[in-house]
Length: 120
Image (cartoon, rainbow, N blue to C red; front, side, top):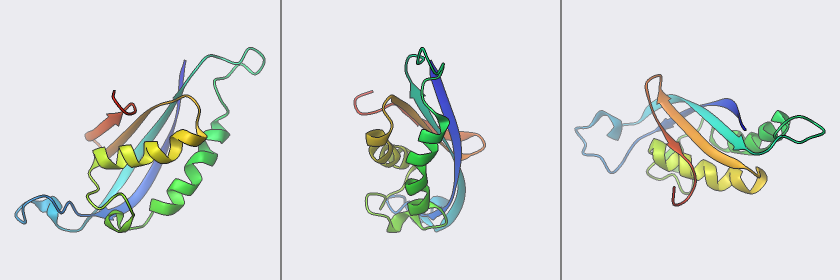
């Protein structure tokens, strides 16, 4: 069974590896839609995979670190592509979320990426 929570981040970024002619090489903003998925068996007593509040609790420090910030100024996000952001999020959420199975990062309403952990 998979469950998920959707969160939003309002961030600025620029992608420094791109040529200066590319619009994303300049500072710009996104409202990222982040979907955090946890997978597992249903607890036979509680009837759920995990408490949604546990996902929220794991998310809170990540949100506080990133929201309304310039991503390039965060250690590990010097080149903050959506793919890089997904990996960064995984590394911080996984220790507190047993069963973390997927992170989806939408940078616009129709463009994003899905990360399922190292080697996948």
